Amino acid sequence: MDARVIRVVVVSGSLRAPSRTHGLLQALVERLPAVLPKLEVHWVRIAELSASLAGSLERDSASADLQPHLQAIEQADLLLVGSPVYRASYTGLFKHLFDLVDYQSLKGVPVVLAATGGSERHALMIDHQLRPLFAFFQAHTLPYGLYASVESFDDQRLADPAQFERIERVLDTVGAFFHIPVARAA
Image (tube, rainbow, N blue to C red; front, side, top):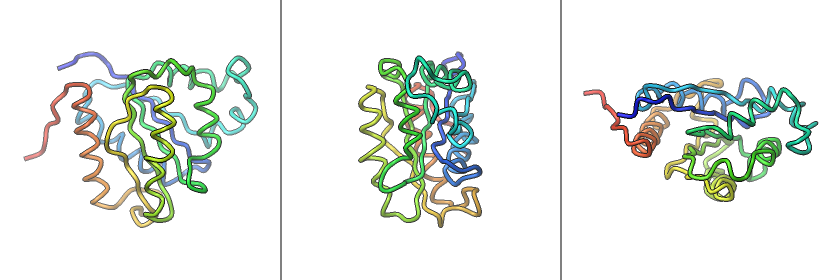
């Protein structure tokens, strides 16, 4: 088993806090130690960075508040990214954040894609919007994405048993990427 610390960066693309997107990503992060026993988690919350992002037109002029988050993304061993669906895509500030990331820094980095929306009809956003974005970076998007609609939540907290089963499938792919067998409860 790999003994090194895995640097996990979680990007919550919601413009609100709290949010269902954050709740979905939080549920994933809570289960992640079952696969990656040594991990360091860094959260990037667009809702908290919106003013810094809006005022940073280029990487060289990015605000001091934003720099540590950009560096964390560029040095990540694993990215967990999620956005609510707005007009069939991710939020504009989510995209702007990645516009500021060095385009060569994510080559081969595994990425778990997640999205939340009002209904199941928005689930294809993962494959039609998020996957192409990370293909540009030559990142390694893992095969299972997580999509949850409003019905999957109790307030902002994930509550649907089917979603927790999907999280387990995602964890299988994360473990396989890092060559770590996933232990299952008997």
